[in-house]
Length: 136
Image (tube, rainbow, N blue to C red):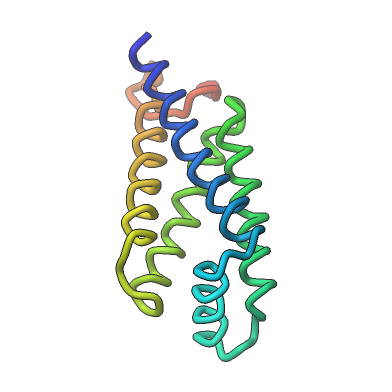
């Protein structure tokens, strides 16, 4: 019961965080979000315009959050969270600097990694297999 609660709690915390960032920051276009994505757009020499960068990341984060909420797609969602947070962490290291959003990305990445670890199980042969798959 405790493990199941932990898994649901992780899924909810990560998904709510992603949805909050997407809906209230990126889609709403708050000045801090616009400034951050303007800085990112300038880092890639304007190849991706700020609104496209900001709204595109919002759509991606919304999609990942929904995938992570659905039990059957949660492992895929966790992998996408890890990949996305890696990109965000690298953008903070090389362009944006360290701050609250950097720490937030680290926490989300760790939670998604913990989720993947907790949902793994061992097969009869001692090999690791994912939950929901069958041994050949």
